[in-house]
Length: 453
Image (cartoon, rainbow, N blue to C red; front, side, top):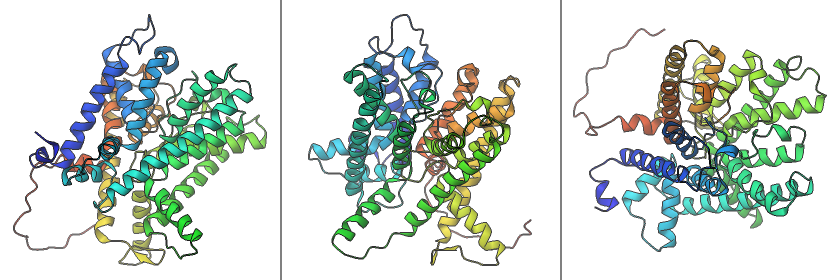
């Protein structure tokens, strides 16, 4: 049965979930091949499944050492999985369909719409071309930059080694995957500011959202032709919120850890470490520091940043930056006595406001529920701050950890896998996936006011 016909019997959201489940199974098979695993490495079924889901959701949480577990063939397989997971399964498949000259039907367009977290199907094929084009361009530039840097600075003896590590790091950074093959994330590059700067640029380009990148490109084209161009409200809110969160996160970490983890570090080192940690907490999971040594308030702030996550229609998870911004603006405007949510001279659609609160409250409920269950399952072997950090990292598909991932019980690991999966498909898709009856109610009950607060 063709996909377009199957969509008539299965909703697009349910089909999308099935596609990601199938992709996880395929990823598990690829990563468990004899050529993928180093000889003598014990890699059980739960560890394989955990790694596959972490890769498909581009999270980066891992129960094994990537460098010590996989062969070069396995690393290549992992990189391909990260690429598909980063740009989205339907985006990758649609690109293949376009290259084969096949027509993109309504069924495919619906799946792309949900996969890219968009509200309509207008211009989706054009968006796919941009998404793939940006991914190849930025990763190619990153590959050249990191390969050259690794070789020139003497991290590796040969150009081939530098290219091998540079290529994987470029893919992992842009897709915000958080996986590394260095063996200790980026702890070995703590003093290499050029390496960190390139990594931060790729992280931001991957997590700020494809619509923002497309509008920026359109703006540059319009400027070249000396034409006027107006950015959408979505881009204005997204960019403002995204960089404000980075600045707030860096400022808070700098302040909280000034006389703590950073006590003996010079000022420039404190500033760089704070900035990089705030950027990677957006969704990347690559770390230049051991987060287990941070104060509890710092871990909680980073957990909040990971819970918010990246921007919509990007490689990241979480509740998304626009959701947080609209919830904040709605509360602020209500406190000011305004009936509408207004920003940048525009009024936000009421349905979008309601949708934001639904996503926010559902996200909070999922995360709190997971924290309670995991803390109970672990019998308090780990501190509550560590559990909160781990859960937030999984939900936001970030990948940062205080080092407890491999120590979790099997039941806790399954919950973490479930969180990573929800983070990848998105809360709205998760909620819509629970809907099996799409028929509208043919009547409305009388309205009655309630006492609130």
